[in-house]
Length: 110
Image (cartoon, rainbow, N blue to C red; front, top):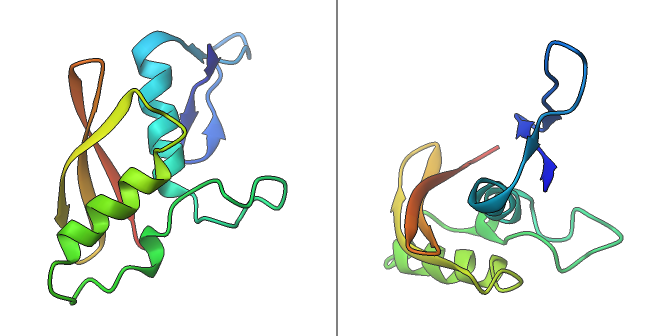
């Protein structure tokens, strides 16, 4: 169980209590967090996050490189598998599978 996040902020209900996620929803949120945090941004966990922000989108095989980078970022989550990647001008869109359920996770370039 973990707090629900939206755009980096913890969501609260009308009573001011944190909205919580559990089960597969919490796992997908955790995967999204692993992919969207730049590796090295957390001083207390320098190995956390992804190197996706270093990706040369114009390089040949850039989608395969993005898949490898995403898989590396999700190594701490053995239940998560990156199925596909599509590179757009402003983002990379991944399909991630956790326990046979697939969802889209997007990483926006900043």
